[in-house]
Length: 204
Image (tube, rainbow, N blue to C red; front, side):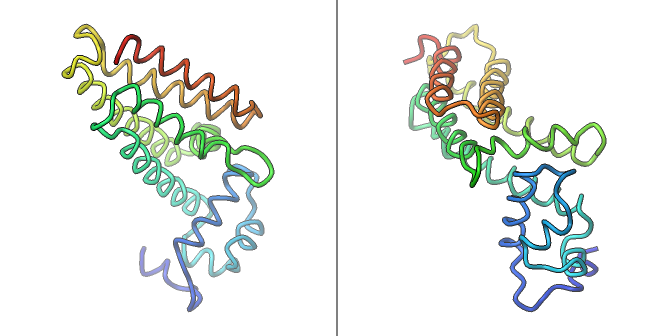
């Protein structure tokens, strides 16, 4: 498959840059509304080259989702720096998320996964798999920090790290949807602060 995908690539082909451009198209338009003409224009690849490099449109979309997922995991790991307090960690998670969600040339884009993959998951099994795996990976990473919080006394011994992690993720999902719907930065930041208080409670 990899050898097949190499056919048709122009000499100056930059896969990472092309995927970034394709990601922008999918993020703005969604999977269904992103045409091959849109993708060709954004990536500067004609259709044969686009197919040769990435396969069909769904293959290309999945590649952008995987890249977004990895970027998200990297950002999450940085935000959950264990040298900081749990309260600071969750606040950093939401600040980093909003920096992504409020970006966009014409309007706030929200989250690529929540905003586009959730709409395609019912009809596209591979999209559903990436979406589910991504959400579970994010939850697992946050859960690790919650468990550390219990060990350190930042959370009560009775706390449920798994449920707290999912609650933290749920706030993030709400921020993503509301950002795409046009809520102001001030409103979203207020929700984020409330989320920190809800999750951390009396944590130092």
